[in-house]
Image (cartoon, rainbow, N blue to C red; front, side, top):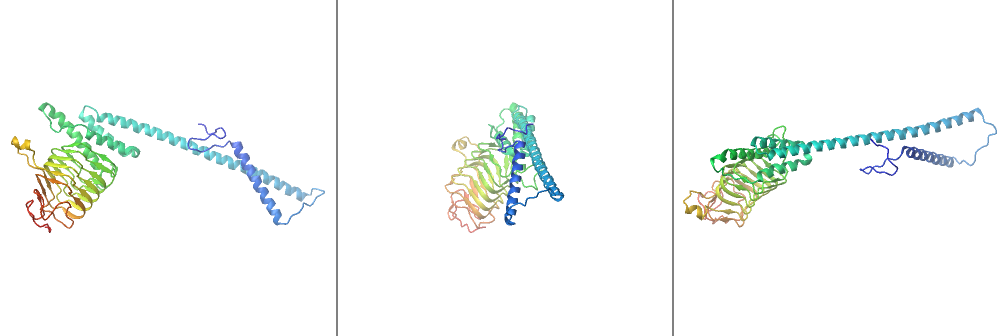
Amino acid sequence: MRVMERPGKRRRDGARLVPIAWAIGGTLALALAFAAAVTIAGLHFLHFHRLKPEPELSAANLYNLLKVAFAFAAGVGGVFALVTAYRRQRVAEFAQELASRAEDREAARLFNERFGEAAGQLGHDNAAVRLAGVYAMARLADDWPAQRQTCVDVLCAYLRMPYQPDPGPDAEQQAHRSLREVRRTVISVITIHLQSSDRRIPTAQDWRGRNLDFTGTVFDVGNFQNAQFTGGTVRFDGAQFTGGEVRFVGAEFTGGTVSFRRARFTGGKVIFDGARFAGGTVRFDGAEFTGGEVSFGHAEFAGGTVRFDGAEFAGPGVSDLAVGDRVAGGKVIFDGAQFTGGKVIFDGAQFTGGEVSFDLAMEWSAPPLGIDWDNPPLGVVAPGTGAGGTGASTSGP
């Protein structure tokens, strides 16, 4: 370990190590200069003009001279001791810093090895190995705050990979069930880390406020129950909800931005029952509700902004009807929902089929904007009417 460096050579953090001879000489010179300045100042204030000559050296003067000599020697020794102690302290600090850097490098190496192993497991052909990779990546995210977002990004990227919800031939159903279970586990692991501290398991760290990118993800299963979206950006842009059940029951949207722009709700059921929208912005701009059911039962809209600008609420396509399929139009249900504050906006939304029901809304003090509630569009069920497009009053249930 090199703790002595050439004069003027700087360490990487900008600190400079001065040779010890220079340090001692400089300190001694500074001490002598200070002593001389004090002596001169003292003589000046005592009105001293000249020294009284002594023809003989008396015992008293010799004693005083020896005291001065010993004091000077002690001062020089003190300078040496001070500089040496300071130097020793600096050397110890440098050694500790080098050791800390070595520990950081070793920790980073171990974390990178764990990251590579977990990523390799996620890409394995065997579903059991992929499941192990999900948990390994989650544990790494908990242990590695500096790269937590990177680990979360990898888990989200796994969900964004191409996925076909239709299992196809019988021979492929087993593989599909295994893949679906891994995807369900990824969502479950993420959700656990988005819950409040009293709900999270003790070993799970807080991932709230992290960015989550589910852009284009196909959801045929998933449970975000009681997740708290309190910061960062969460993107479901272009996601497809095509079957099964995806639950946002009791979720809280209280900060940041959660985007469902151009998401497609074409089958199954997406449940926002009991969700709380009290801050931030939740966007369903351009989303398509053309099949299945989206439920906001007993949801609370008490703050922030929820936008459905340009969303499409449509029934089955012409081709579906032509072949006689029994496909119901999409349903968006707000039974028991409370509109007490914030903004819920439907500007430019298209209602061409299906049903958007506010019939059993519980509280209507801040009704959604962008809909003529005196004459709502066909398919929009106003509060307390039981039928859409009837021109019923919206004074509240």
